[in-house]
Figure 1 (cartoon, rainbow, N blue to C red):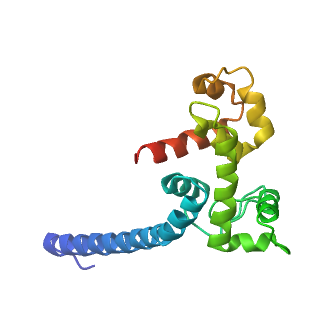
Figure 2: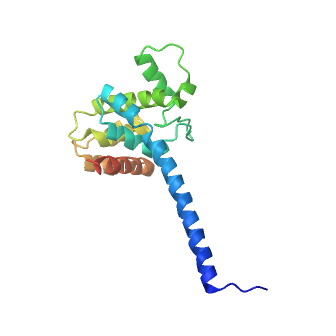
Figure 3: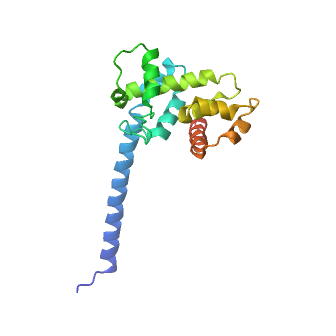
Length: 184
């Protein structure tokens, strides 16, 4: 059996570490390219609907990590994980005929439908001092749940937060607000 000198072993370790760093760097660059490839589209559509583009970006990050082919367990589709029923509401409001849920895999269509839905929720909760927790909870778990949780909160988001009965919705709202407000 051949013995390897300490110097040779260190060189092998060094070059293996360098190769690993290069691979990690290339993978990270690929993810960043995917994330930022939607920036212009998000900005344009968010402005059309009067929503801060950073909020839409935070939702897309949480929902799909910017993967347009992402599908959820409950039938959510695409970047913003839009459900078919929400997309049909959007398509009807836009007077689009012959809408198919498969169109939600198109990033522009998905961002449009998701942004419209979130903008509508923000508008509905705009009577609150801070409508975002309510709107994001609605985006995640539906209007009827949020109406139940908001009942009797006297416009206090902390009380509302305590009344959310779905731990996944609490995490969802917290994570998006943290990402969004962390960039303000």
